[in-house]
Length: 635
Image 1 (tube, helix red, strand yellow):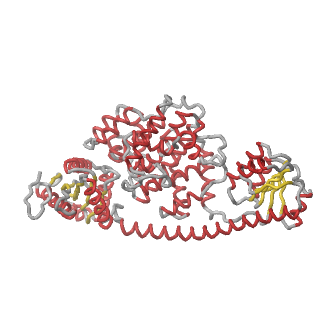
Image 2 (image 1 turned 90 degrees about the vertical axis):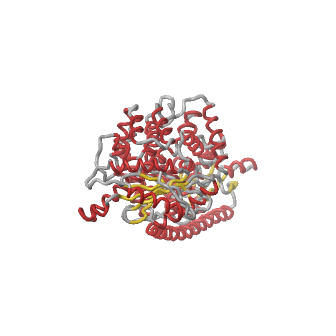
Image 3 (image 1 turned 135 degrees about the vertical axis):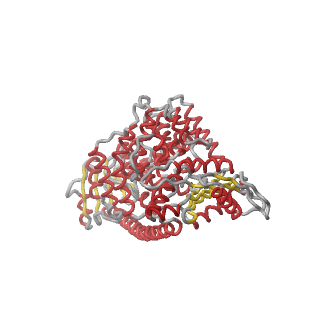
């Protein structure tokens, strides 16, 4: 599906939500104004702070976030200007949307567990922040906001259509998203994307909330990786905040492996979240008893700390549920004579408990008539235990219509009872054989998956080492070359502007000579953090060599790139910390695709940087590209 089709789809979904004429979740006016200011690109820190001060709660929360675990290791601050510098102008605007939505009124959602929704949202945000820090894909606080709002569509749909959105009636085994699509024509993920686009989030971010499995154009920037990160965050939050005691982990294992994370890395990430969760919950005013939060983390950690279960069921075991379920009864005697271990449960409630406790291979449900409550129970069992349970239903009134209803409810077979014992045993043996075959296939799949995880981990580590500067954590020359080639091709094809900014710290050698290389390294790392906070997720800031950095600005002309470079220059000039004051110079050049190469753009930016140095340093100079000896002058 093309991007234009998705945008048209978003418009349709918003129209359907608004047609309900119910109050929908909406960011504050200040948050929306911040989003508009960021879209203009020339907005600086002080303009953003002036706007943010219109909402005292937002200012307080911004300072709290800047002092939170999202920015661990940095000094505490009480000034909103420092907080904005730390968070970044664009990231702050998007974070403001999330912060104001968390504090939205809830009186129009009486039957919806709003606190649980934001508890899961906080878990998703913390996972996204940790993944972003590991993969260096987008700024951590921007990833946190994306995780926080990735399921905001569920809240909007619940407001428009009622709590049934999150807690649908029994739907014959259909998933929540399937039920939503059948009931309203779209699901909560699609609604989330529509809302984020409406609130002026970048395309790459709102595309990421649409699962990779759906027909989505994940072609914008790092959309595919972001979408996979969102899927993993949703899976962790779903397992962490699940109402059921047993976690469902296959999706989490698979998604984490595709991100280069093995089982141990996932457990480490969970432990980090466990530490950060209480403080972030207080900032967001998410209420959860400490003992409950601890129990949820401990339950999921215990499930993650062991290998996925392969086949821990009792061998050749069967559970008989119904009036004939009595030890020593004729039915049980036939099964025991065949060497099976037989569990019995007269009623459905005990049957459910024994299924969860012992997980037998075969379930035999006996009843005179397969009434509605029995069929509903069968659906529940099939949905919870999946195909690795053979379900045989016995009835004294075997009719075609009844048989069809039973099979539709999840039964593997239906048999008239009383029946020939040999026929009963043949069907039970067939069921046990089928379950053992599935277990063997699952074992092979798990073995292959383990090898895949290990290979993915090794490849991810090798790629990280090959494409990342060890000191600053920025992309290195190799990563920059790949990004430049793709950005150049995309810009030339679409006729979009592309600009490069060459940045160099002034008198950096003097800092190394006077204070030592350790202090120089601290200065370089502090500068890269400050500069990175000013960039967009679609740009790349890379280390060129020594104290030189390169910023590639997609869809940006020289004038806008120079304005961005000037904001960066001022931000570095205003830096404070346990290191000497430092300034930087910058050279800017815009690509001209007719008769030029990307090397020409970099050379022009380097020449502009040289003019900035000769002009007194601590300044920004733009320079046209020189092609075939054409003269150029600094602007």
